[in-house]
Image: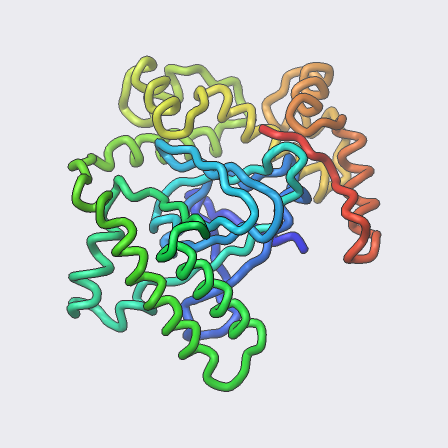
Length: 316
């Protein structure tokens, strides 16, 4: 299946709850079937646990890059920018669990929130934490993750208690495993994160225009040199590399969802020439815009559960 990620105007993921009043959800992603084989830079207020069921992915946060393979898992902190992409030839399937931390805290200003929740959420050094099944406590987190997924899938009466209890146990183990990060944490300013979000939003609003480095930098009230450093340190990509990625993603969306010509889409996405657009698209997506549209629509018509043929397998 393909989990359709929807980002709002602030690049925050709109998380839909399957059960009203229960701030929790699971979603399963066949990453290779995503356009380009990646989930774009985004963030969400919910915390996230994920488990790689099959294959391998690269998980990038603001200042770290992790490689996860079959059986390994990760924790992604609240409001953290992150990005996931397929490892070449890995055909990964990733199970994600997102939830509001109040599900574990059980209320505001109590001992659980003050002692166990807030220190994790406010630790900006703890962008993400990787779980390896070879480590006892981390293996237990993965087992609890799978147990809560089984309960959520069966939906038997009272399953919400099972999920909440499993999450509480997972959180306790996370606190133990991440203690060294918490103790060694630096007083890291969130200034860099706020700057990068402002510049990403500027690109979102002006990607169809000719954009200079200075214009991107001014949107965050910083110099061009600081803009370059900020993108490199936070996203491990240049400002124009991110701009190109965004333009390609928007073009892929228009190819999927509209019947506009390739030329129209090229100019609408800031490519001032169809030849350049075609070369850039093929470099990123491993197919031409026309091939992408044709393959996507053929796959849309194909029955689910096929032989795993994918739209395009381009890596950013």
